Amino acid sequence: VQLQASGGGLVQAGGSLRLSCAASGRTSSRSGMGWFRQAPGKEREFVAVERWSGGTTYYADSVKGRFTISRDNAKNTVYLQMNRLKPEDTAVYYCATRNGRIVTSSINRAEVYDSWGQGTQLTVSS
Image (cartoon, rainbow, N blue to C red):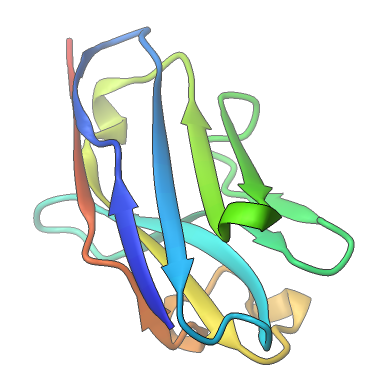
């Protein structure tokens, strides 16, 4: 599976932006897709994920209520709508997916995902 992330940019605090992640290749065995982010000098952290089956979504506490993950099955694309952005949201955002099942207890762990997009930069100015 190849993932192509896009949509990053520069936005003022309080603004909104939508990221996209298009999947190509063998996507039928994928159990979900999600977003992680990595700020300079920090570890990659979980942002949100949506399961393919049932559409259950999971969010990091830091983005809950501000970010919404969604998907377009026909386009094999996942979106991350980001509202009320804060300077601390500044990071490179990566989309990720896994071949096979993801147990709920591990869904926020980067190491369980085996395909990653190239990352897209979001910068939120204060």
